[in-house]
Length: 219
Length: 219
DNA sequence: ATTCCAGCCTACCAAGCGGTAGGTAAGTGC
DNA sequence: GCACTTACCTACCGCTTGGTAGGCTGGAAT
Image (cartoon, rainbow over all chains, first blue to last red; front, side, top):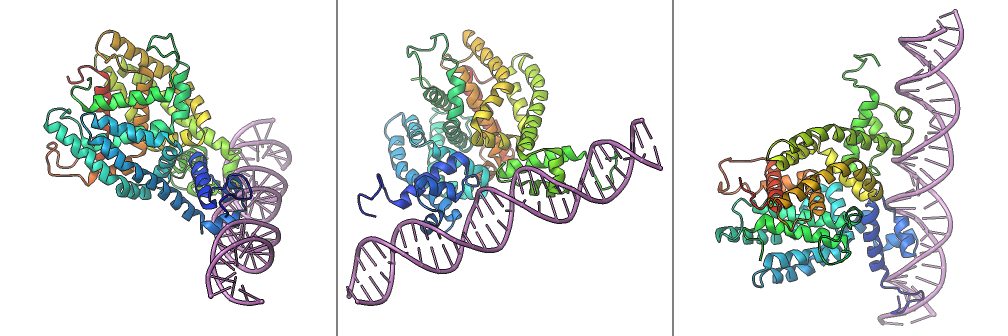
C-alpha cells in the first residue's frame, strides 16, 4: 500500500473496487455483475474483494452511499446558484445536469435502483433529495404568488418530472445520440455545422422545463 | 388443450408463459428472473417451458415482440386521434398514455431493455416507432410554420423527451404515488378531496408537454 | 390396431454464483 | 524477537442457473 505501488497507478484498492463496481453495476446491473467480474476489473482475486466488502450487498450499499455523498457535495453549489439573482432556476438545473454529465453511470445506476428496489430507492430519495425538492417547490409557489409562474403548475409533480427527465435523458444518451445524429440535416437550425446530440437534447429539455414553468419564458 | 381444460382457467399454455414472463421480467428484470420461477408461476416444470420456447433468449424475444404487436395495434387509433380536429396533439398523447397505463409492465420492460440492451433497443425503436415519431415531428414543424408552435422547439428532441417522460412516469408510478400522496395537503389545490397521484402526475406531464410546445397553450 | 406426435414429465449435467476456510508475506509496535 | 494486523492468495463448498436426454400419456390420423 505504498504511495507508489508495485504496479502502475494504484489509487487505493477499496476506491478502485468502488469505481469499477459503480461502472459495472451501471452497465450490467447489480444482478448482472458477478464479484468475479469486478475482481478481474480491479486486478485482484474474488476473496480479496470480499475482504474489503463483507458481501455483495454491502458493496452495493457502499456504491450508492458514495454516489449520494458526491451528490451532497454538489447540493450547496446548486443552492448557491439557486439564490443568486434572477436565473436561479436555470442555473440550478444546469448544476444538476452537470452532476450527472460528469459521470453518466450515476444516472444509469439510479434508474436501475428505481426499477430493481423501488422501496429502498424511495427511502433514499426522501433522505437525500427531500430537502432540496421541498426548497424548489417553495420557490415555485412563491413564483406563482408573484405571477411569474403559471398558476396551473403542480409544483411537486413538476419537480419530479423535471428531475426524472434529466436522469432519463443522461441515462438514455447513448440511444438519443444515435437517434438525433442522423438528422444532421440541411444546416437549417443554427450556425454550428454539427452539434453534440446530448447538448441538443439537454438544451431542449431546459427549454421545455422553462416553458412549462414561466409565464414569460423568453428573456 | 381442450377449450375448458382439466384445471381452472387455462388460456393456452404458451400465452400463459408469455403473460407471466412479461410480468416477471418487468418486476425483476430478464437476468433476475429464472426459468424455474416462470415455470412455477405458470404451474408447469421448467423443461415444459423450454418445450414452448427453445431458450430463455427466445422467450425474451417473444415477450418483446408481443409487446410491440400490441403497440402496433394501438398506433392506428393514435393516428386517428391525431388527425381529427384541433386537439390532435393532446388526444394522441392521451392514447399513448392509455397504452402504458393499461399495463404498466410495458413501461418497466422498455426501461429495462433500454438499460440492458441499448443497441437492440435502439433498433426496435427505429423499427416500431420511427414512422410515428417522424409523423409527429412533421406535425410540429407545420405548427411552427403556422406560428402556433414555439420556433425554439427542437422537434426531434422534443418528441423523444415527451415519450421518455411518459414511459418513465408510468414505470416510476409506484414511487411517484407515495411521494405525491403525503402532500394531500390543505385542500388548497382543487375541489377533489383526494386525487389519484398517477392522474395528478400525468396531468402535470401533459400540461408541461403542452406549454413546451404551443405559443397559446390555454384554450 | 397401430402409428404418430404434441405436451408434459423426471433425472441429470456443466458452469457459474456468492461466500468460507485457512494460509502466507509484508509491515508495525513493543 | 515476537505478537499482531493488513492485504492478499488458493482451494473449496453448497446452491442455482440454463439447457439436455429420454420416458410417459392421451388423442388424432392412417
